[in-house]
Length: 543
Ligand code: NA7
Image (cartoon, rainbow, N blue to C red; front, side):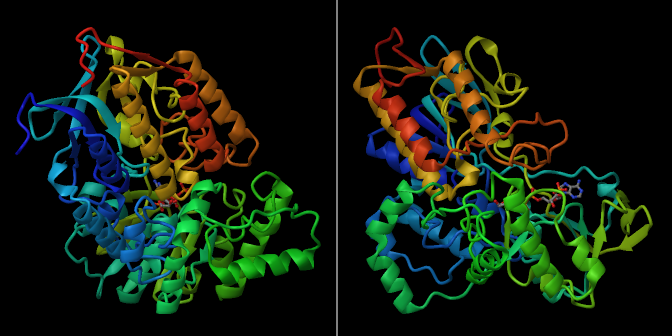
C-alpha cells in the first residue's frame, strides 16, 4: 500500500543502493516495518547514477559483491574480472528481486527534512513528494560519493551544446559520433570515460588540473573454469574478506621499500603493474603510504611507465603526477588511458598553465584561447562522505541541525551516530573506513552492527541510542591520529574535503583498517554500547 501522510514505520532507510537494500533485508529479518526512500527513478544508487561511458568497478567483481548469502554467491555469474556499470546494476536488480526488496522501496522520492522528537523518540521525515512519515530509526544509506561536485564554471548556462556530469549521466544513449567533446577532470571517472569517448568522438580535449596515477586494469572476461574455482572457494574467501584490512584479500607485505635494492623494487613493481589490481603497487612494501621516500619509488615507477607509453614527451610530462604521493588520492584503474593521448584527435590542456576563464555559447575559453565544442563532460567528482547527509535538513535534539553540528567537520562515534542525533545511523559515512576499503565489505559490517544494535534496543525495551559528546570527541581524535601516521592528510583530495570550495579540511576516513574498525565496533557493543546513552521513552513502547 502506498505510504500515507502521517504513517508510522519502524525504520526509514534513505537511499536504495547496495547499502540501503541490504539494510532493508536485515531490518525485515528483525520483523521491523521499514521503508526505503530513493530519489532516483530506480534502485542501484551509485550504479544507477554513474552510467557514463566506461563506468566500471575498480575492485574485482567476485570481491565487490554481497557476502551475506552463499546461495547468491553460487547463482550469480560475473562475466568480467572488473564488472562494468550495467552488469553491477543488473546484479543489484537481481538481489532486489531475489530477496523481494522492491515492495518497500519508494522511488522518485527524496527525503528533504528529518526532525527528531525527543518526547517520543521518533523522527518525522518529509519528502519532496509531499507528506511525512515518522520512524523510530533512520539509516542514512545515502552513499559516500553521491552528491556531484559542480565546478561552477562561469557561463555554464550559456553553452549551446550538451553538458553531462559523469555522476548524473542520462539514461538515454549519448552519442559522441562526429562531435567535438571536452572532458573536465582526470580522476577515476574521467580516466574511465576518456578512452571510450575517444573511440567515437571527432575530437576529444581533456582539461586536466591534476594528473592521476593510473594503473592498467587488465580487465578480461572470466573463464568458466575460473568462475567454477572461485565459486568453490567462496565460503573461505568471504571469511578472509571479512577479516581483511581493506575488504580485498592478499598477503600483507613484510618489508620496507627502502630495504630492497632498486632492481628488486622494480621487479616487484613490474609484477604488480602486470597483474592489474588497485592495491597491487601498495601491497608490495609496508611503507608506501607512510614514508615519503618509499612512496617516491613507486611514484617514479608509474611516471616511467607513462613516459614509455605516451609518445609525445611534453604530454607524458603533463600526465605525470608530481604534486602528491602515490595513492594519497585514490589511484585509478584504466584501460588504454595513457595510450589514448597518442591518438591524433585527442588533446590535453593543462589547466594549471592555462586555466578555464568561462564557458561560452560555443565552448570553453581558457586563458590562451577558446575551444569550440559540442559536448562538455564534467568528471569533477563528488562532495564525498558528508555531502549526502548534510544535503538533508536534519534537525536533532534541541533544534540543532546536522549541518551546523558538522560546520567544522563531521563528528560522530564510530562513524555511525552523531551526538544529539539519536537513532540516526550512517552507513559508509565520514570517520569510518568506507572509501579506503572495498565498500561492499564495509557496508555489510556497518549494516550488521546497526541491525544488532537495533535488536539490542528492542529486546531491552529501549527506544533511544545517542552518542555521548565525549565519545564523539575521542573518536574524532582517534581517526585523526590514525590518519596522521600516513601521508594522506597533507594532500588536497576528496579524502580531506579539499576538492569542494569552503568544505572544512578534515581527513574524512578511518585509516586503521576495516579489521581493526570491526574489532572496535564489536568491543563497543560488547561493553553495553560504550560511549552511547541508551534510554526508554515514557510511552514504554519499543517501536
Ligand atoms: P575525483 O577523483 O574527485 O576527480 C575529479 C577530477 O575533477 C579531478 O581531476 C579534479 O582535479 C577535477 N576537478 C574538480 N573540480 C574541477 C574544476 N573546477 N576545474 C577543473 N577540474 C576540476 O572524482 P571521480 O568521479 O573521478 O572519482 C571519485 C571516486 O569515485 C573515485 O576515486 C572512485 O573511488 C570512485 P583536482 O584533482 O581537484 O585538481
